[in-house]
Every structure is written in C-alpha cells, then in structure tokens.
Image (tube, rainbow, N blue to C red):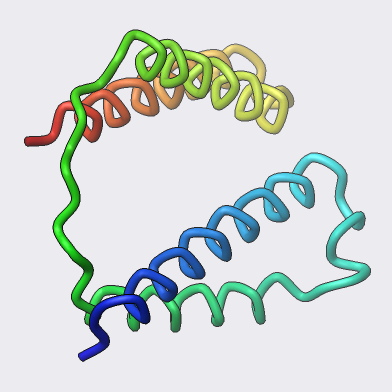
Length: 120
C-alpha cells in the first residue's frame, strides 16, 4: 500500500487528471474537434482510471471534515444550472423532451451534490 506523502501526491494527481479530463471532454462536446485533433481522450481516461485505482488502495491521512457553508450551497446550485444549460444545449433537437431531460438532470446534480456535502 502507498502511505504518507506518496498517497497525498497520488490523490492530488488523480483529482487533477480527473478534472482535466472532464473539462476537456466538456469542451470537446460543446465545440467538436477542438480537443480531439490534439489528444485522444481515451488515453487520458485510461490514465485517470489507473491513478484512481492506485488512489483507492492508498492510505491517506484522516482529514477534518468542515461543515458546508452558504457559499458551498450557492456553488452547488450554480453547477446545477450550468449542467441544465449544457444538457439543454446538447438535446435541443428533441423539442419539449429536452426541457424535461435537462430539468431532471439539473435537479439530480443539485440533490446529489447536496447529499455529498452533507455526508457524515
């Protein structure tokens, strides 16, 4: 098992790679061909999965959990609205069904994020 500072570095690497991969995937979905011309996202996804597996099996020190603030909840609501807008943009050709799909997805983003924030 990986312990101590190595575990913290692996955890940080995984989080950074995951955020980068998700951001690049989002950019590729909105403006097709902007990322895939330069990098194959499947290779990046494999690296993210491997570092994620290593991160799961590493021992990280227990950190103090802070209570969520109003700023955290506002951030969650903003992410839900952004998620709603992106899904609506990508499914607009479905007509009225796209509104329902987008609304449900936005609500799910908000509710799941609040559950994660309040996790004991």
